[in-house]
Image 1 (cartoon, rainbow, N blue to C red):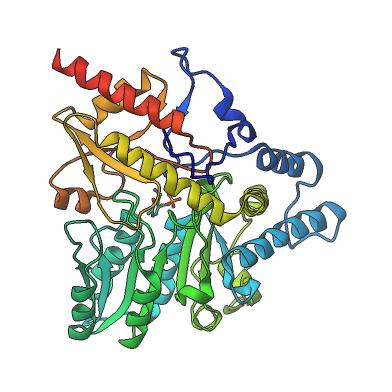
Image 2: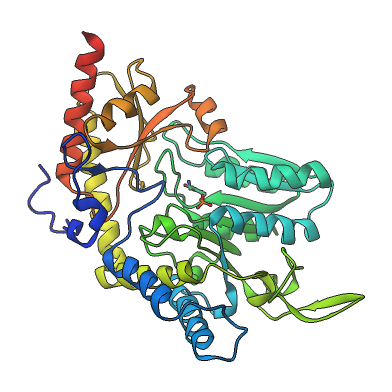
Length: 413
Ligand code: PMP
């Protein structure tokens, strides 16, 4: 059991209607796939419903009551995001569809304007495809080089080689994840940003796995761009955020063209709108953004530090228990880690394993987790990943461990 002296364990399942149901097997539903998408508390579900029932209308356009209420709700959500990540201005908060869109925006706008043949984009070996492919796509066209910072045996970024790569190459952009969705490693972003800036590069951070779990402070991190997704932090799918330093965003060309992002349009051309509208072409995901604002209220009411502590405690407990399962191999051994654990179990295929766990009512994820190059480096084609959040309890972990032991026995026999 979790040691009694640890008082940071939260008990929040009753806030999440989806978690209070029985799996079709008759077992309790054990949801260990929050790194893919977290669940939504009642307060968020109701806020989204309330918008649809009471003030659904397009934002920023109509001078009528519903449109004004919708605009107020949407802009209030932006203000909440600004506070949550400690940005300097609401203009630095661009609503997107999610992390993937945020990084593509940086690549297509900043990258297209600033990267050329001879330049280097430096990524890490633990990146999600969404932090690799946008640069590979642009590199094919522009002729710059994409290089990768190696990781150590414990699954941490090799900071010595990072500095060497910065010193030896004309690096214009460093792209790195704050927290790996496979290894769990939390990367030293403040230090990496300082080094990137020292060598004249900008730094773009994938915050998909960190923002839901720990304080992310744009002033303390001093990063240039930071992208994250609502659906991993108790909000609906379809909304995410790209933070960018105002001076950079102001100098960048628009990414998508269309309604809302212009000042003036003539037959001959257009002038772009001010920030953040310049980067929000078309009708945004209004309900989802409002939901994100309420999710932030919820996370802040519990305290993001408390959530971090809770997930740390649950993860430590899970690591201790999982290490006792015969033939398990856990990937990633950084002392600084978030709430994901990827593993293999003997030669049981990861997909068979998640199927076996689903028979016990346990939801995990199997595959390459959109990190194929990393899996190739680890020497496996697929892993099974259990991931935790503020509603995960020690009972959930116990059920996972029990089911894994049962599966080992089954495949033995
Ligand atoms: N980066 C990381 C580290 C992720 O875990 C994910 C989600 N799997 C993404 C980026 C992409 O997020 P989204 O699908 O919400 O754009």
